[in-house]
Figure 1 (cartoon, one colour):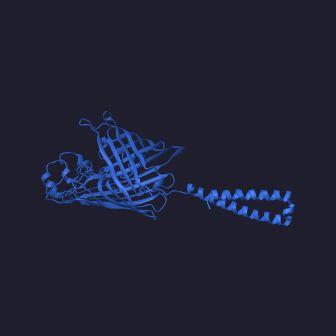
Figure 2: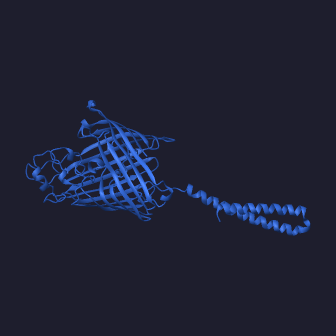
Figure 3: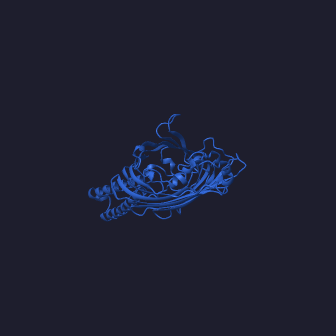
Amino acid sequence: MNATQAQARLARTLVAATLLVAAGSTAAQSATEVELARRLDQLATELGAVKAQLSQLQQQRVAPANAPVAAAPVEPVSTSASAAPATVLTGYGEINLNRPTRAKQEAQADVRRFVLGYQHRIDEKTKVVAELELEHAVSSAGDPGEVAVEQAYVERQITPKLGLRAGLFLMPVGLLNENHEPTAYCGVERNFVETAIIPTTWREGGVQLVGSFDNGLTVQGGLSTGFDLNKWDAASAEGKASPLGSIHQELALARSHDLAVFGALNWRGLPGLLLGGSLFTGRATQGQSPVTSRTTLWDLHARWTPGRWDLSTLYARGSIGNTARLNTPLVGNPSLIPGSFDGFYAQAAYRLWSHQDFALSPFVRWERFNTARSYAELGQGLTPEAARSERVITLGANLQVAQGIVLKADLQRFRENADLNRVNLGLGWSF
């Protein structure tokens, strides 16, 4: 019985009771008082049963709206897609100001990123996801900007817990690469470990299985394009800034002789706790050289959000194999290929104040990273010295002024290269 049927039955019962009362007072000759009382008692019993059924149905209708919803950062495929709009527009952007404290004349403001995307659901089990990104406001032959397809993939639900992605997608590495909107992280700029060591935003073309299970475990893995060491420019400093960032292909006429495999595990079995790790490995000379070389990157990460606190930490390490043979013809250039590189950070943020949509969260982050921790031996006087690890302390705050809009400010201090010390201001949004 549904609520409408219960309400109709209740109305009929009330009408019948009223008629019987009237009949008892005006037509006593048609029934004795004893019979009338018996029938009234019977109707009262039925009326109570109908009221109980109606109350139960109303509680069942209200309960789903008040039930808690578990957060799920990785969403393979929605099982209730029919209730959602077929097409959803998304986007994010950030405008930043960087002001060096020792060289104020180098202060710079920039539309760092402007991204528009959409998700279109073809049917209950299939959707398309795409994002288009513009960096540095203007893109042309004479301007520094860049236009890039950040994501473009199709996702199909295979089972209620398992989905399949195919196309260009973000790699499930670290805490930031898949969740890099400015409203999702502390600080004006993305942290150095997840940009210099993990080349966020890092995407590859391929196929990926995504599974989410009731115990809080999310599993991702697949086959994808990889890095191209033929892009290494030993005459520039690009490789020193980010070894993998200088050789990733972004599915732009990507060489695909050598493919890579990857996997990631994330566990959210306790409220507020995330534990995870990832691994990516594949050959990277792409059949263009007689030398073969394997590039590997892995990370371990954790995030805990007890009450007002937001605590996170991550360690990432990468390696490039057979670099002695690769570097031999490059000797004499300023940037040879490192054999290993790594980085670590720990961060603590605290929601100090909140009111309606406003929230103020100061934070502090300590980082150590080294983009050239070691070089393969080339011979006496030829092997470059390992780089010194840079250490950075970032102290700042995020101020949320509305859902999806944040103002940021921070101060950064570098241990090895104090000329990089700076003050940063930022505006970010996402929807």
